[in-house]
Length: 223
Ligand SMILES: O=C(O)c1ccccc1N[C@@H]1O[C@H](COP(=O)(O)O)[C@@H](O)[C@H]1O
Image 1 (tube, rainbow, N blue to C red):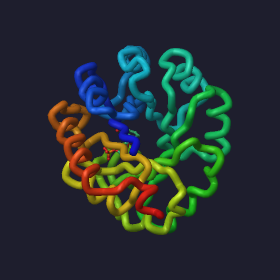
Image 2: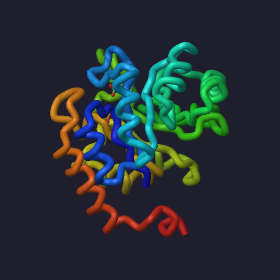
Image 3: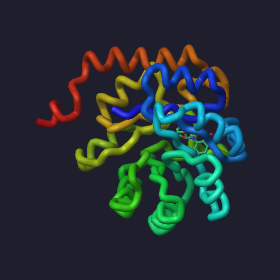
Image 4: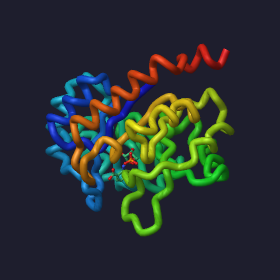
């Protein structure tokens, strides 16, 4: 299973995530976020990762000038589009940058899952996240979970990432209920908004290690 630790901002916490085998590490470019980094700081962390995990920039409705700067100055493996980007815009950004795109979709009801089909063959990966709570200025990173049982209706071959309020205490339930191809966590490994905590990163991976002993791999279970 892919594990993405998102909203990192220091070498210490990037190294904690890499030391436990994170498959993806994410950096947020969104000025209203307590996790926002400028491009220079992101580029430095991407250089530190040096291919040991896939790197992801989280961005919200970026314009062409910004996506060009991400590609030229930071050179991540992925862009995570966490705004209202349409399938056409996702296609344009992929063609423009040559980067893989993860499209975040807010989920609160079964009806929200209908939007996934429009991104089929367009986005490289769907990220199913909670819908923004009333009053929040952040489209993601709110530390709020949604009803994972809604995902039972999805085609089991859809390889999506699951996010929204996941932490060491509930990741086992998230995996057992949703059976996602990947888990994405941000607030759940923080000691305060925007402050990643190496001890919580380790606790999160400890919970995954315990889970690996209990839950058979996806393929074995489906057959
Ligand atoms: O983290 C942010 O501040 C953020 C800002 C703008 C868009 C997305 C953001 N975060 C992403 O949201 C999901 C879920 O986060 P959480 O675990 O519920 O805190 C994750 O991909 C974050 O990177």
